[in-house]
Length: 182
Image (cartoon, rainbow, N blue to C red):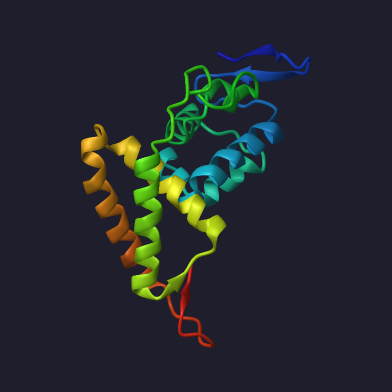
Protein backbone atom coordinates (compact mmCIF):
# COMPACT_ATOMS: atom_id res chain seq x y z
CA UNK A 1 0.00 0.00 0.00
CA UNK A 2 1.79 3.12 -1.26
CA UNK A 3 0.89 6.62 -0.31
CA UNK A 4 2.55 9.97 -0.69
CA UNK A 5 3.19 12.19 2.28
CA UNK A 6 4.65 15.65 2.48
CA UNK A 7 7.52 16.08 4.84
CA UNK A 8 7.93 19.56 6.32
CA UNK A 9 11.29 20.22 7.92
CA UNK A 10 12.02 23.00 10.39
CA UNK A 11 14.09 24.72 7.73
CA UNK A 12 10.99 25.22 5.57
CA UNK A 13 12.05 22.76 2.89
CA UNK A 14 9.58 20.12 1.95
CA UNK A 15 9.99 17.00 -0.06
CA UNK A 16 7.59 14.35 -1.22
CA UNK A 17 8.31 10.74 -0.47
CA UNK A 18 6.49 7.47 -0.94
CA UNK A 19 5.90 5.14 1.97
CA UNK A 20 5.73 1.44 1.15
CA UNK A 21 6.22 -1.83 2.92
CA UNK A 22 9.34 -2.84 0.99
CA UNK A 23 11.20 0.37 0.27
CA UNK A 24 11.66 3.76 1.90
CA UNK A 25 12.50 6.13 -0.91
CA UNK A 26 12.73 9.82 -0.24
CA UNK A 27 14.12 12.43 -2.48
CA UNK A 28 16.45 9.83 -3.98
CA UNK A 29 19.51 11.99 -4.40
CA UNK A 30 19.15 13.49 -0.92
CA UNK A 31 18.58 10.07 0.63
CA UNK A 32 21.62 8.85 -1.28
CA UNK A 33 23.68 11.71 0.09
CA UNK A 34 22.64 10.83 3.63
CA UNK A 35 23.49 7.16 3.04
CA UNK A 36 26.88 8.30 1.77
CA UNK A 37 27.38 10.33 4.96
CA UNK A 38 26.72 7.25 7.08
CA UNK A 39 29.02 5.05 5.00
CA UNK A 40 31.74 7.68 5.18
CA UNK A 41 31.43 7.91 8.97
CA UNK A 42 31.63 4.20 9.75
CA UNK A 43 33.50 2.94 6.68
CA UNK A 44 32.03 1.26 3.63
CA UNK A 45 32.87 -2.29 4.71
CA UNK A 46 31.33 -1.80 8.17
CA UNK A 47 28.24 -0.21 6.59
CA UNK A 48 27.92 -3.11 4.14
CA UNK A 49 28.12 -5.66 6.93
CA UNK A 50 25.60 -3.77 9.10
CA UNK A 51 23.14 -3.38 6.22
CA UNK A 52 23.51 -6.89 4.86
CA UNK A 53 24.35 -5.48 1.43
CA UNK A 54 27.55 -5.25 -0.59
CA UNK A 55 29.59 -2.07 -0.88
CA UNK A 56 28.63 -2.03 -4.56
CA UNK A 57 24.93 -2.11 -3.67
CA UNK A 58 25.37 0.66 -1.08
CA UNK A 59 27.00 2.81 -3.77
CA UNK A 60 23.93 2.20 -5.96
CA UNK A 61 21.74 3.54 -3.16
CA UNK A 62 23.99 6.60 -2.89
CA UNK A 63 23.46 7.17 -6.62
CA UNK A 64 19.69 7.12 -6.20
CA UNK A 65 18.53 3.52 -5.76
CA UNK A 66 15.74 2.78 -3.30
CA UNK A 67 17.05 0.87 -0.27
CA UNK A 68 14.88 -1.49 1.76
CA UNK A 69 13.93 -0.21 5.21
CA UNK A 70 16.12 -2.91 6.77
CA UNK A 71 19.20 -1.34 5.14
CA UNK A 72 18.40 2.07 6.58
CA UNK A 73 17.74 0.55 10.00
CA UNK A 74 21.09 -1.26 9.95
CA UNK A 75 22.96 1.86 8.86
CA UNK A 76 21.29 3.98 11.53
CA UNK A 77 22.03 1.43 14.25
CA UNK A 78 25.73 1.03 13.42
CA UNK A 79 26.33 4.79 13.10
CA UNK A 80 24.17 6.11 15.95
CA UNK A 81 22.42 8.26 13.35
CA UNK A 82 18.71 8.92 13.72
CA UNK A 83 16.53 6.82 11.41
CA UNK A 84 14.26 9.85 11.05
CA UNK A 85 17.16 11.98 9.83
CA UNK A 86 18.43 9.23 7.53
CA UNK A 87 15.03 8.74 5.88
CA UNK A 88 13.77 12.33 5.79
CA UNK A 89 16.71 14.62 6.43
CA UNK A 90 14.72 16.24 9.25
CA UNK A 91 15.40 16.34 12.96
CA UNK A 92 18.69 15.78 14.75
CA UNK A 93 21.24 13.81 12.74
CA UNK A 94 22.56 11.83 15.69
CA UNK A 95 20.16 9.62 17.58
CA UNK A 96 21.94 10.63 20.76
CA UNK A 97 21.47 14.38 20.07
CA UNK A 98 18.50 14.43 22.41
CA UNK A 99 20.53 12.80 25.17
CA UNK A 100 23.34 14.47 27.12
CA UNK A 101 26.79 13.62 25.76
CA UNK A 102 29.05 11.51 27.91
CA UNK A 103 32.10 13.40 29.11
CA UNK A 104 35.45 12.32 27.76
CA UNK A 105 37.40 10.26 30.26
CA UNK A 106 40.83 11.92 30.40
CA UNK A 107 42.59 8.92 31.90
CA UNK A 108 41.26 6.57 29.23
CA UNK A 109 42.20 9.00 26.46
CA UNK A 110 45.71 9.43 27.90
CA UNK A 111 46.21 5.66 28.08
CA UNK A 112 44.91 5.20 24.53
CA UNK A 113 47.22 7.90 23.10
CA UNK A 114 50.18 6.49 25.05
CA UNK A 115 49.41 2.95 23.90
CA UNK A 116 49.05 3.94 20.25
CA UNK A 117 52.31 5.92 20.35
CA UNK A 118 54.19 2.99 21.90
CA UNK A 119 52.66 0.52 19.45
CA UNK A 120 53.69 2.60 16.44
CA UNK A 121 57.22 2.97 17.85
CA UNK A 122 57.51 -0.78 18.52
CA UNK A 123 56.62 -1.70 14.94
CA UNK A 124 58.70 1.11 13.43
CA UNK A 125 55.76 3.03 12.00
CA UNK A 126 54.95 6.73 12.00
CA UNK A 127 51.66 8.51 12.57
CA UNK A 128 50.84 12.18 12.13
CA UNK A 129 49.56 13.93 15.27
CA UNK A 130 46.16 14.61 13.70
CA UNK A 131 45.81 10.94 12.77
CA UNK A 132 46.93 9.95 16.27
CA UNK A 133 44.12 12.07 17.70
CA UNK A 134 41.53 10.57 15.36
CA UNK A 135 42.67 7.01 15.99
CA UNK A 136 42.75 7.58 19.76
CA UNK A 137 39.21 8.99 19.73
CA UNK A 138 37.96 6.07 17.64
CA UNK A 139 39.59 3.47 19.89
CA UNK A 140 38.41 5.21 23.08
CA UNK A 141 34.85 5.38 21.74
CA UNK A 142 34.99 1.69 20.79
CA UNK A 143 36.29 0.75 24.23
CA UNK A 144 33.50 2.64 25.98
CA UNK A 145 30.90 1.17 23.59
CA UNK A 146 31.88 -2.48 24.08
CA UNK A 147 32.70 -2.50 27.77
CA UNK A 148 30.53 -2.60 30.86
CA UNK A 149 32.50 0.15 32.57
CA UNK A 150 35.94 1.47 33.50
CA UNK A 151 36.99 -1.85 35.05
CA UNK A 152 36.84 -3.42 31.57
CA UNK A 153 38.80 -0.67 29.82
CA UNK A 154 42.35 -2.01 30.39
CA UNK A 155 41.52 -5.35 28.79
CA UNK A 156 39.67 -3.74 25.90
CA UNK A 157 42.58 -1.34 25.33
CA UNK A 158 45.08 -4.19 25.37
CA UNK A 159 43.05 -6.04 22.74
CA UNK A 160 42.70 -2.90 20.59
CA UNK A 161 46.45 -2.26 20.73
CA UNK A 162 47.28 -5.88 19.84
CA UNK A 163 44.97 -5.60 16.84
CA UNK A 164 46.60 -2.30 15.86
CA UNK A 165 50.09 -3.82 16.09
CA UNK A 166 49.03 -6.81 13.99
CA UNK A 167 47.50 -4.52 11.36
CA UNK A 168 50.60 -2.31 11.28
CA UNK A 169 52.90 -5.31 10.86
CA UNK A 170 50.75 -6.46 7.94
CA UNK A 171 51.22 -3.08 6.22
CA UNK A 172 54.03 -3.27 3.64
CA UNK A 173 57.13 -1.12 4.19
CA UNK A 174 57.58 1.64 1.58
CA UNK A 175 60.44 0.78 -0.80
CA UNK A 176 62.33 4.08 -0.29
CA UNK A 177 62.04 4.00 3.49
CA UNK A 178 62.62 1.64 6.35
CA UNK A 179 59.64 3.02 8.25
CA UNK A 180 56.03 1.98 7.90
CA UNK A 181 53.46 4.71 7.60
CA UNK A 182 49.79 4.25 8.30
